[in-house]
Amino acid sequence: MAIVNRTPDSFYDRGATWAEGAAFERVREAVAAGADLVDVGGVKAGHGSPVDVAEEIRRTARFVAAVRDEFPDLPISVDTWRHEVGRVVCEAGADVLNDAWGGHDPRLAEVAAEFGAGLVCTHTGGATPRTAPHRVAYPDVVADIVERTAALAERAERLGVHPRRILVDPGHDFGKNTWHSLEATRRLGELVATGRPVLVSLSNKDFVGETLDAPVGERLTGTLAVSAVSAWLGATMFRAHNVAETRATLDMVAAVRGDRPPARVLRGLA
Image (tube, rainbow, N blue to C red; front, side, top):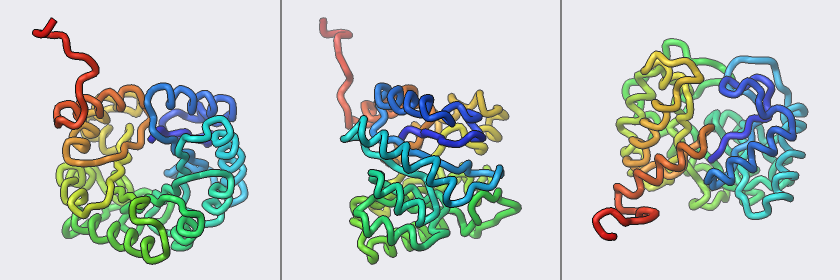
């Protein structure tokens, strides 16, 4: 899942794909590098300038429609927690609503059901959108992840979202400190065991940076390491800034697991 930020202040690319032309080029590059779908976001996840519903729609809906025109078969996800935005982007051609704020707006799941869209159910511990965790604590963070994402997914099913179009995300960094995110990674198999496909959003996040004492621009190695661990433990979708490197990492893990043959085998045979 390639990240395409339609924001001027994203933490990673600092607005590199804010302009529509640059965002389109990002989509083209991501597809060429092996992305299976693109995730378009119109609001920075963390603190920043306020973005109201109308502005979020302006940043995302027309762009989604244009991507759909150029790539008719490319699955498109939109990262939003607002049902008003979800409705407009689904009308524009979005296939998945990535609810990164864990059901903060319960009507978003209703929109997904109405349009037959997929839905990502994310654990945030009940955090308010665009807020950072402060001394958050859990008796057992993984048990909380499993319980809350299961509840969101089951509600989405009851509303009519197809069960095969529901993903769960442990929500690294969201409502968590670094210890929590590391534990969520280490025990990811417990979320995989629920039977829902698991999306992990690991790319260049703060828990990677804090673990390695690495600034944003130096977190790729750590990101690929936790991506490999998550793939081995059964995650099925990976939200990523660095598509080519993530694709190669996942292909290598799949080959070691026996799920993918090598691209070619000559050593010892030719």
